Length: 605
Image (cartoon, rainbow, N blue to C red):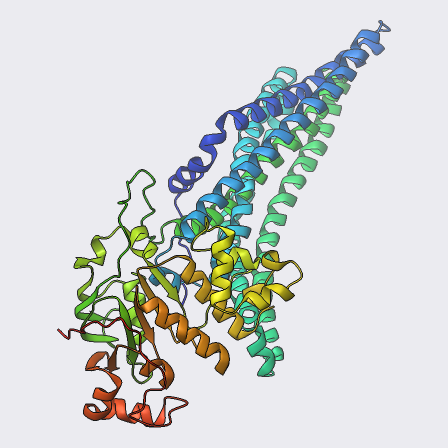
């Protein structure tokens, strides 16, 4: 599911959003604009110097000083304008950097429901493609529009001082072209907005295929996925071509207007020179001004088109900035220095649905797990087991009911404190691109090396380190592609253990392990459960039978609780699961693994 296309912003909203990005760079933009304007002023002085040179040549007067002045104006104007352009380009990159930093900071704090509703590829496009277009509107549109308008006004004033008749002819032709170009602006705005949306769609389509590349290949779906990506690319091309067409029409109409005005001025000016109304040098200077007029007029047209291109990007960035995020941790808040103790988890009549209305995933879930000890969640697929973990982590908030840790509603816990006390190993055990050390230290960045190696030994990853070419600093590939499924799972478990959590959540932690490593991990879980509250979603009998307590879930409710022996005798669903769905089951009433010494009473609300 994706968000609807970003609605266009009003001019006021666009500039307000843009100003928030350019405000830290006001001085640099003003300096660059002033340099550009100074360079334009030097260019406008050149026709007057050329007129003086023609007059000196016609009167057979010395012209060396005038020629030096004209040369100095050309060189100085080019240097100053080039310096201004460099400063503006550099500032534009700074604006893009600011936008990317703000946006990525916000996106990484998105609430999970918002992330569920948004395509990652589209968000990626907003961070990369859309922020790049801020460069156009932040400096080019803003400064080019201002300097172009100022230069145009100055040129018109100077042209009027030379000859009002020629000015009237030139402005008449340009005004007709400007009116035609103005009519194209709404078309440019719609086309550029659609082009940006289609680029985001292309990124989403490509991310969908690359994110499941092995599945695509195993399914023989390369051609179908290629067709889908090509179709998205073609839509992006279509909208981009439409935008280019309207921009080309605007640009060509501007060029045609200047050329037509040049011819009209040349004809009219030639007649006025022949009649003696003006000097030839005046006509030369006027034609040079008209030639220089091309630049400011083109700047204004370019500023308008770039504004519409940038406004579409700003609308998409603004929409992403409005997505709901989790609260950031308060660095000034004092954290209590208490001795960690096992967490006590309580669900009180929790009702939850991932979307408004039915179906409900939880329909009045109630239980209490006092620590330390190991509690297993079992039940058929869709019973709501993984959702228990998602609610404890506050990835989602319950529709009604309460979730308590140590008797305190988790919505009253500072979010960073809550998650700092929890270790969570997901079912697919995600591993991030980067080094093995990066992944292990993800949740506990200040862990010393000796603690890292201890965790590696406990999870039997020390042999992996020995054979990796760079040890802990070996890259693990995209999503841990250089590791086996079992190795990724053990890395995730080691990462959770390094956090020294008060509550450890394991979503089928032994799913990808062989028998030997599974036995080792069971021993680790048993050891951790002596001092920590461990809640595990279990699908293997060996994990279930070692639990102190078992919660049986069905259809979003806890239907039974007890030990393995008790549930075999009292709950038909559990007995059926033990007999048919738990692998390695060799006797309904037999425990293969000694349970941890620490015991705690399970309270069913």
